[in-house]
Length: 596
Image (tube, rainbow, N blue to C red; front, top):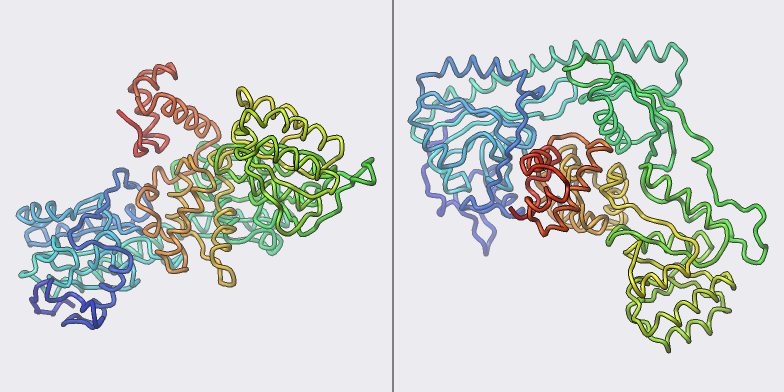
């Protein structure tokens, strides 16, 4: 209950920077302030974030709306405001009793669309209740933000009774001099009502899902999974095939394909390199929250695929290398890349790896060398630094069978092009273990002259074309940053935001984002607020279809070529400018840094 009558100013309630000791702050408030400062909250509110496309028909809102309506009616003539926030602390509904409070709330940005997580809004009844996972009251100067210090609030988490996760926060706010002891009991009672409605909603859909799951099991299907946003039920056989990241990937997959269809079937790759064929069948009615039954069939031939070894010259037969494993990822593009490497890795000889900057060409080059049996440090040569003399020296060492990786062969200086061509021709004749990388797949001038002298090549797709790989890549990158420690997981909101991003910098960009997120999360699971500011837009909350990804890539390419000029980009695409703007919004590109 709100009984604290203290009225000290915010600057008197700061923490002693030298001693680290609290100055008249309640212990729970002091702990929140320290946490807020550690993650960069600004007392002036300069880090406030606004989300333009908050959900208006979520499960939380459907359950809470009648309760909030009733509470708002009861408090219609009182100077309080009822706030409903989602699982990311974004306000999705606001009801004000007396209108005189509206101006103060608007000036403090206590309005729908604003994110009140601690990183953006400091200590407050919504963000701190979410962080603590319990009811929390904040009054006056206990708020870190100066704009909130005239207010008092009580926030309480709304816990889904089925999934046991916090799905939102219900908060009551008033002027600091109008606090009532009834605020907390009112909120606690309303939260219980919302949670009961959540249970009633879940109970009906979960009963249907469970019934269909049991039917599929009785038909003799060994690997069956029942999925909804709140539930995953799997047979023991299915559980052995997938882990938690696979579950998230599968949910994105069915959300993409079962939006307008009743059934879908296609291949997926799980985290352990297991390829499966998934048949998904929608259980819920169209327009209702998605739930589905999935039947998994392992694709044994692809799971055990190895480099072809038949009819290979004995002297240059690549040794079998179990330690090389498989390329990280489960997308169709990565599956094709793995198959191509399997085809060429059985015979040693020059290979060209192409792809956009940051896609992981050097990683693939090292992987090919491992498949040839070359572990440990592989000498790496920057093609842009080659001279005729260094190329001549390298050619003299071909017979020693030393493995090399030559990066940026499309940037070789003009005077080194002819010697490099002769080097590559000799390497092919001698089956030398050389892997080259190039950013351009169709270079002009000197680069083209070098490309044509490497007869075998593999292409690494950009991350935006294999977004299904993001979970696997993230786990691999996070594990590399925290060796010897449990690997953090991407929480659902953070995952949705990353999947919605276009990734012009590819895997290198993802690695940089995760490095920042690890520092902010202190090595624990990564939530939305731990991501850099430019990566937190949730977009539509769904994964784009293959057609939409192609459209998005074409639009981005046109905007890049037009230096961000939308009118010129629309002309290049052959569409009206209004159509382009509509596509930008639909494909989650409206916040990208393009010109007007």
